[in-house]
Length: 153
Image 1 (cartoon, rainbow, N blue to C red):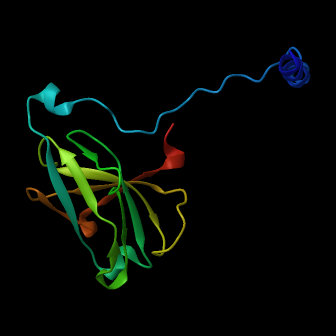
Image 2 (image 1 turned 90 degrees about the vertical axis):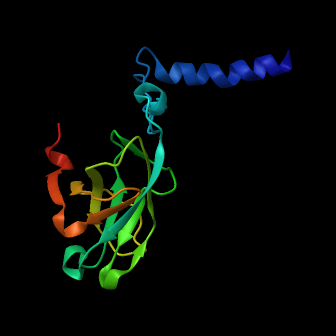
């Protein structure tokens, strides 16, 4: 009985604080990849693909951070969708994709940053042509910069 009274003593003041205007409910947003079984839906087997990047110092300046944006026919493996490309052909991270077939192009969220920079807001979309089977070749000099995020509505 004492526990029940203590509970009401804590909850009632909180209810009174909201009065007649409780805060509006906030929708929950999931940031997880789709759970669709693409192999079952397409009848095609899923295979792993590895992204290999080519770039020049002028393409990346002090560094370029790429975050793979999931898109059919591929989705990124959770621990390998962030890649840092830096000067002098230095890199960190891997791009591993699971696809129903080799993509012809892929898109990244991108930003310029040094290797050890904290995660921060990216600039927009970078779309890159892809060649190869299983070992995908991505030449950064052939990528096209899309609109910045503020231009999306």
